[in-house]
Image 1 (tube, rainbow, N blue to C red):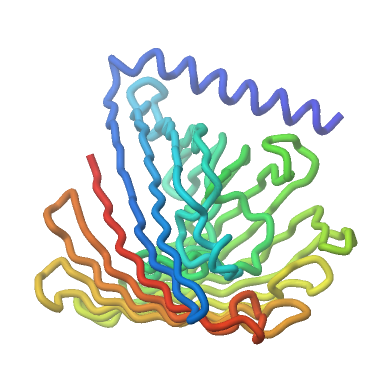
Image 2 (image 1 turned 135 degrees about the vertical axis):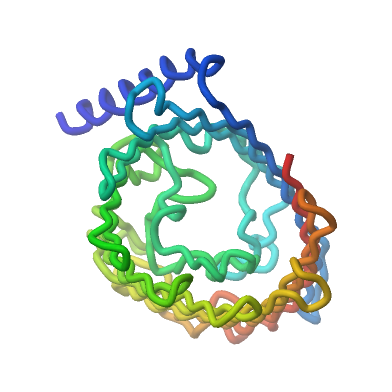
Amino acid sequence: MLKKTLNKISSITLFFITIATTEVKALETIFNADITVDNSFIDNNTFSKNVIRGLLNVGFETNLTNLIGKQSYISVGYALQRGEQGSDIAIDIQGFSNIDEQDFNHAYEVIFAVKLNKKLFIKLGQMDANSDFAFTEYGQEFINSSMGVSPTIQGIPTYPQPSIGIYSQYKLNSAITTRLGFYESSAKYNHFDDFFSIAEVQWHYQGHSSVKLGAWNHSYLENSDRISASSTDIYIVVDHYFNEKFSAFMQWGQAKKKVVAVDQHFSLGVNYQGLFSEEDTLGLGFTQADVVGAYSEQVTELFYLFPINDKINIKPDVQYISSPSGDKSVSDLLIFTLRLTAQF
């Protein structure tokens, strides 16, 4: 019964979003597109391999404020990824590239959002939960996936496959914001077999700094021994702005060993902006994932972001991975990546 009801809700939501798009010509619409290409060289002393892959995102956002009377919009995005999956070769558990995935092309996000009053904001539709929860503001330029979201948060609907859900944000005051999210999270796309829920409290301090404390629940997880159970745990994210040159982040998360691959994770990083130009960024970070039944995988990452102009930038990146997937019998990895990003 619940499954049928949720399917109807998701269908109705997408229907009204489609109806709203018929007003695109009469409303303010912004179209966007970006492409990211990674060229990585993987070496572990016994073999070396070059891997190339790319990710294309296209979409639009239409302001519905004049139509509805409240501050609101719809956002629709489509994603296409092609190339070899680098982590299948490197055998790392954290994902040395945050665009790594098997080839896919599908609708990425389809969102209706409305600000009901000065304090309450709501979104519903198909969305990437990591855009709203557990992300590091000052870790987003790092390429390793675990710099952006803790691998302990099992089942969070994010890249490469967001899912149907509802999100709410409530500002208690200028310093404290609360967030709640509830998403479909089954292994089969929008099959409504299990769910992922998450809550987060964010405290803003000193202008551009914040601390986030979150708790999450995945209603169904199954490990390699086919033991299934729900999982509930917590995470912490700290973003600190020192000055216009320096910023840093730290994150920590844990999960039950019974049904996850990584039961504890810690990462931190620092950025320096303006090394050779006003817009360039140098970043150094470290992330450690404790693998259940094995050792810890540790990654040190160094990158340099250089903007060619306001639309195109290049990012040389090097990562040293110790004990890939927690296996000390496997040689450590040295991975060089050159990332090109262009916005249109």
